[in-house]
Image (cartoon, rainbow over all chains, first blue to last red; front, top):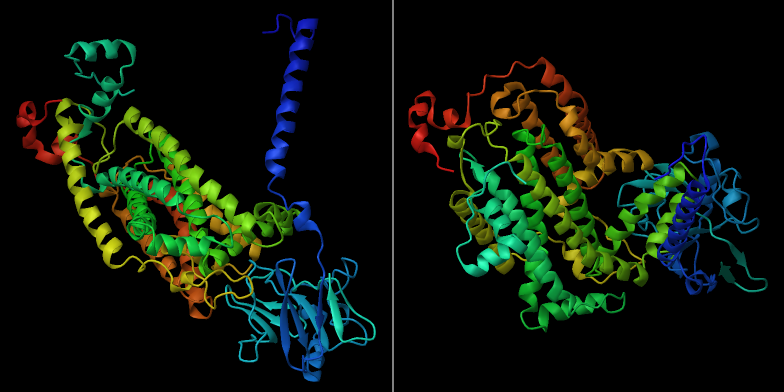
Length: 192
Length: 423
């Protein structure tokens, strides 16, 4: 199309290239609404929080609640379970990071960093296996809790310990600790 | 398209009028009536016709099912139950569609295995083969999204597990995988938004498949069909006209196929499915044992055999994508495994591995099952990446016959050549 060489462009070459570039950018911009419509919309994003009363949950028991469409595990751990979680050496962990939304990203995966001070018996986790999104077993007393007494994902065989940390299996990360707070002067907990 | 002279002669005035304006009857006649077909093709060459039939059946039943199905999380499960119980002949249409998916894959797997055995991917059929792999990928995407629609427990958890495969990208670019998964979901978990978009795409993709099938047939008719000897058509006696020879053979194969198909539709409609999928989707409870439909089991076994998330996902996808490179991985100059004694041995080992992986994919991911899955996964990749290139170099193939005619009639057959074929 261009009548002149690259070393000697004329005004027609400039107009052709500018028009093509403009069309390309326009096409890319027009594509964006078609892609972005699939993302979670504002009504989905609105970060709903959930409050639950923990009074009926005895030591050794666990409950599952729904938060943002995801199951959240709340386990009232026994002293033995807490002790077992604290005795683990960090070097033995597959994922060394705490994965606690309330703490900086590089925090180490000690049991202390995955619970709240003074409330060490309460473990709050997003109950979704970090492998491919199944719900691990271990919430009911009759469930298979895996080799480390925490949770066991039946889909692809990931074992989590009593701190919800991945120990064996294909899952890459520890179970996520969502943002939560114990409400003062009550037995309530607020997730989100 | 093909390098043969069509004998098409429009006789009527309208026929001549149309031939000068849109020579569609000429195209059909040239490609499906007097198209030269190798005289020695066996029943494995009928699988192409069976696949075209399956695609047609899925589209026809799918369109009418769409008139009754409601793609929302609240109503999907009940609308499928209503199709089975209330809609006139809904039970029949739904059973044909569900069983049809299985038979589609059955025919596709035989079709692919035939291509691997007889070297149908070798020059000049590389593009033909690649288009086939593209169709296979589109089929898998369509089947996966279709399986989500009944919104049972297996539907829901299959979608959860498979969409989460993309979160493995987090290991490379932190956060990107999660963004992609949430983009696919339209939320923070598999939800109504996910179901509705899968429904839209499940309706669209079969027409994309039909388009690629058109290219696949175009490529096939441009280079001509392969055959059990792997030899090219060299003389008119090597070939017979497509109609009636191949047409009648395909019709007979189709009749047998449809007989088995309808047996499943009427007597075993749920045999190939899972009872868990008649429990409505529950985001709070994963079934104790999640398995995909049978046709995905080998890939599922590969995914689970590897103890690392990202590598497992890469292995699973590359097990299929590697097929794209088979035309160049196979170094042998002889096409058909009929004349390749060493390759034939490895071919059956490969088929055996795929079947074993299928069995292991249906078993829980523990103990010896995992180890065997690793052994067969290793062979799957070794076969494609190492065995194919090396055997092609080391092996001394048997000498194929001089021509297709010679393969059928023997050397003496040359005397009959003049009466052997007529196209």
